[in-house]
Every structure is written in structure tokens, then in C-alpha cells.
Image 1 (cartoon, one colour):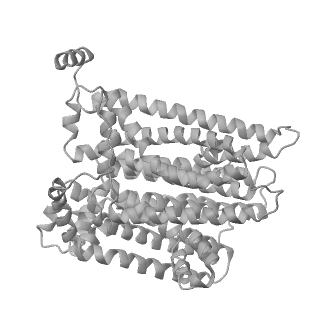
Image 2 (image 1 turned 90 degrees about the horizontal axis):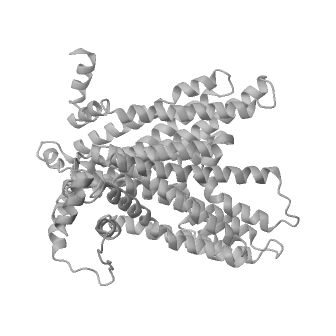
Image 3 (image 1 turned 60 degrees about the horizontal axis):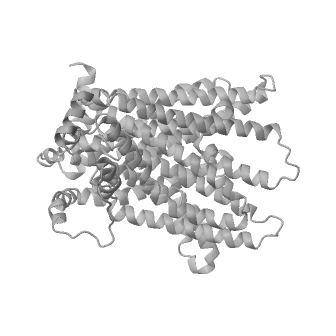
Length: 574
């Protein structure tokens, strides 16, 4: 039987056989090895870039070695925590929703296992997956520690922050997965929950400070929510102060928030499943909403399906609606406060401070929207396979190009919810600085190109993967590593940073608008060249992914119908 068999046999005693199954299946999946390799390669690129930046103009002495190790350790900690926050929900959010979508969760309910045993087993499996993913970066950190400059206390603090965050991310993702009906919805809800938990407390605290004593009761709540942010805690620990108190506060708040999210999921797990199972029967008797508009099918049935039918079936429920409403209210409130604050500034600045706020806020919103677009596109094909309606679609005379292009367009169309927020942010900037409208035009162009690339990447991963969870994890992993490494590393990788491409036109429009002699410096010309390289590269990559997905469509789906047979079938049907 061996040591491995005896170890897995002991796992069946506690917390149950679900964890044993999760451990066995996780070790057989190639995508986990690919993901760990890509993560280690990204850290190694960050190590090499930091080394070149540090020793470019100085020799390797004691001081420069210590500064190099300190700089890399800061980048390593941020990248490690960002990887957990980016990859963790994609790996864990579909643990229960995938079982429900495959209709295999009934077999778990038929066993003597309780709700707690099922969830603990799933939770343990997801925690082990994320921990093994994080451990792949330890050899890269060991290389940097050979040069000294990294205190053991700092490494120990980072390990505690990472382990606590891994457990918290897995706990909240499992809880969201219990309530979600589909894997795509579970992944998106998990990202929205963490966004509201770790990003919104800062602007909410800013708004509460404007209200004065009327909001004195809510300020401590925002402070406790901010204490759960691992990146903020890591940066505060590095800057000094009472590190143990901040670590204990973070662990306490994360355990409390995770318990609040997990307890209702454990109590109502079977009841939620029964409600979702009977929802389809109740929907048949409902009338269509009065203001729901659906265009005519016309000559492009796939476009109609992706723009109307799929967008109607991909809903996030009450929790998703509340989270999106909260995000909209906070963004609008913060924008109004910044706008009126800029009006009180000297006229010489002419709203420049608000324009930079608009650049940062719009870039951040666009990057978040692109992540949601990738999650939507990554499940566009695999979700139809899991719903057993993919065979009916590929049995039609529709060509592969029609299906792939329609799914890409439908994924890009899902970004329409971002338009009201961008209008709210950009309109005051145009009123204060009319020259900023040129930067908005180029930012929209880059957003369209990046959206096409994100949709093509998600569709390609969805076509090659077997399940929605695998496709979503692969697509988000590739996008996260590409965007994270290019954003954290300067030099040659900067043109491929989505944040640089989205914020660059706005900054350039403000810079050129304030110039008097219009003498372009070499730095401006280098920025323009990097912008052109990045834009053209993403456009070419989107085209290549789309062409490759179309070319492999018939082979991967077993379609042997040739073009002559397709044209004959079309003439016969018409």
C-alpha cells in the first residue's frame, strides 16, 4: 500500500472522504503544475528585474545587496498575496457550484455525510491547492535570501499573513459557492465580495469623514474591515510599528468574517440546493418583465443568443445585485466629493487633481471589468457542455467562425454595465479639462482592444478545458500573471501592462495640454513608443487567439462536416 496510501487512508477518518478525493484528484491535474510553474517563473522574472535595476549603476557591495533584497522581498510579498487573491477564488469558488452544475451533488447528499463534513472536506482540499501553489515561490525567495538583507521575522510574518489569507479566501469562496447556482456566478460573486471587503472600506472611510459626527458609528466598522486586507497589513508590518498586534488583528478579523460567511452556508446547504432545483419549474409560470427588450433574431441567431439569451441566464442573484449597487454608490459618492473638492482649488490647477483621480479610478474600474469579462468568457463553452446543450449547438449548420465570433462579441457586450460608472467619472473631468477628451478616446480604444484580447483568451481556454472551473482558473491565471508581472516590472515589460495602456493616454493628454513650447522630450517619445507596442501587441494577440480558436473548433468538437456538405445543408434547409 505504501506510505502515501496509508496517509490517504488516515484522511478518510477525519474530516471525511471528501478531503481524500480532493487530494487525490488535485495531484492528477496538469493545470496545477502549469500554474505553479508560471507563478515561479513570474517571481524569477521579478527577481531578475529587481537585480538589474539595483546594480545597474552601482557595484555589488553590502549596502546595495541589502537594498536589493529589501526591494525584492517587498515585491515578492505583494505578488504572493496578489496571487492568492487572484487565483484563490478561481480555484475554490466552484467547489460546490461545480458539483451542483454537474448534478453530482445529489450523490453526496445520499451519503451519511453531514453538511459540515462535506464543506470541511471541500475547504481542506481547496486550502491545500492554494498552499501548494504558494509554496512554489519559496525557492525563488531562497535565492534572494542568499545575499542577506531579509530578516527572519519578516519572512515569518509574511508566512502568517499568507496562510491566514489562504484560509480566509478559501472559506469565503466555499461559502459563496454554496449559494451560487453556477460556477461562473460563484467565481464572479467571490471576486465582487473580496472587492467590496478590501477595496471599498477606503473610499467609504473618505465619505464618512465628510459626513462628520453623523457617521461616527460606522467608522470603527470600516477600520476593522480594512484590517482584514493582507496587502495593507504586510506593508504596515514592513514599515515598522507593533507588528504582532496588527497580525493578530488581521487573523482575528479574517476568522470572524470567514465564520460569519461559512455558518449560514453549513446550516442551509441542502435547503439552498432544493431551492435551486425547484427554481426552473417556478420560472416557467413567471411573466417576462415589462421593460426587458430582446431584439429580432434575424440572420444571426448566434449573436442574438449571446447578446440576449446568455446575458439573461447569467445573473448573480440578490447578493450580486447588492454588491454591484454598493460599488456604484461608493464610486458615485467618491467622485462627487473629489469633484467639489477640485472646484475649491486655485484656478491655476484647473481641475488637474480631479483628472488624475479620474485616470486612476477609470483604470482601476476597467481592470476589474476585464477580469469579470475573462471569467464570463471562460465559461461560455464549458457551461454549455455542462448543461448538455452544446451537442445541439454544434449539430446545427452554423460555422465555427460564427459561433466563436458571437461568443467573443457576447463577452465584450457584458462590459456594458461599466459604462455608467465611466460616464460618472469622466464627465466632470471633461467639464474641468476639455483636452482630457482626447485621452478618453484613446483609453476607450485600448479598452476595446484589451476586451477583445480578454474575450479571445477566455474563449480559447473554455474551448480547450474540460470544465468551467478549469477554464476560469487557467484564463484568470494567465491574465493575472501577464498583467501583474508587466505592472510590477519596469523596462521591457511595461508596454504589456493593461494599467499602463489604459492610464497612459489620459496622462499624456494632461501633459501635452499643459505644455507651452511643445518640445517633446525623449521620455515622452519612449512612452509613446511603448504605448504603440503594447496596443499593437494586444490587438495581434487577440486576432491570433480568435483565429486559432476558430481553426481548432471543428477538430476539438468532432465536427467532420466539410464546407461542401455545409453549403448543401444550407441550400436544403432554405
